[in-house]
Structure formats: structure tokens, C-alpha cells
Image (tube, rainbow, N blue to C red; front, side, top):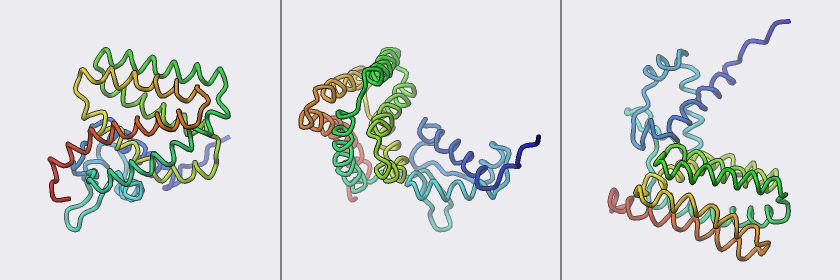
Length: 225
């Protein structure tokens, strides 16, 4: 039995996954140029899947294309920050309410283990591990909400939310990293309270704290936006 050859679409998906992960890990910081020739050489593929992958990441908001300047990692503007933050609050409060109705004891243990690992990584000062677990924690809540149409909506926001989390974590001082990790236990406690208002309010606070950290850095970088 032989395997079917990979299609150009599946190869472009894999290339997009690799570039997306590199952006989330900070290997390609905001504003970094993404040169097709260099990416093709690094990944051992032709220019076609690179071009298609960059187009998909542009649709996600992770990459921006500039006339005659090629592609670069997107930078977050103040307006985009405010829009994304306000939209996340609306959607994730809904997620909290859905999770409160469905969360099992085993799933609670899974989330607690994730937060425990995040706290351990914070103690070590492992920024990338904290970021990865932070992103996985929120994505797991989306999954546990068990709402197919909501999942379709958030698919288009996943890149932007990942960039938001990375930037918000990068804005933390080293001594704040442990506090940030611990805040996920507080969020989980609020969800487990069973009170939709308590859980929603804590989720709002969680997002607003990250937004406030970023607001100051973006104002300094782009005062006219």
C-alpha cells in the first residue's frame, strides 16, 4: 500500500504551522521581515507553499504585506489592541458560562495541571514555556465550551489572540511572570464557582490586565495611532 502524495495545500498548511509557531515563540518578532527565499531555503520547500502560507497568515492577522517591501510580522496598533480586547471579553465571558455548565472533574484536573506547569515555568523564568501553556490554557477553554460555530469564529482570530498573548507576556517584568501564571488559578477558581457573573468578571479582569500592560508600550511606540 502506498501513501497519496502531499498536495500543495497540505504542504502550505504545514509551512504556515511552522512559521506561525516561530512567530508565537518570538523567533520572528513584530516587524521582522519574512523573506520568501530565505524561508524556502530554511524549510527546504519551493516558493509556492511559502507564498501560500504567508497569504494564510496574512488572513489571520499575523503577517502584513507592504507594497514593494514584502511581508513582515504584523505589529499591534492601539486600535487593534482595543478592538481585540473588547471582542475577547465578549466571547470569552460566553466561553466561561459554557464551560461552567460542562466542566468535569477530570477536565478540571487537566486545567490545574496545566496551570501548575505554567507556574513552575514562571519560577524558572522560562518565558516561552509560560507563553505556550498560557495559549494552550485559553484554547482548551474554547474547546471545552463545545460550541461549533463559536469554534469557527475563533479560528479566524486564533493568530491575533496568539500574538496578543505573546506581546502581553513579553511586556511582563521577570518578577511579574509568576504572578501572571498564578492568575490562571484565580481564573479557574472563578469558573469553578459556578456563578456566571463571578466567572465572567474574572475573565474580563484577566484580559483587561494584559491589555493595560500592552497599552502603555504601544502608546510609547506609536503615539499618533
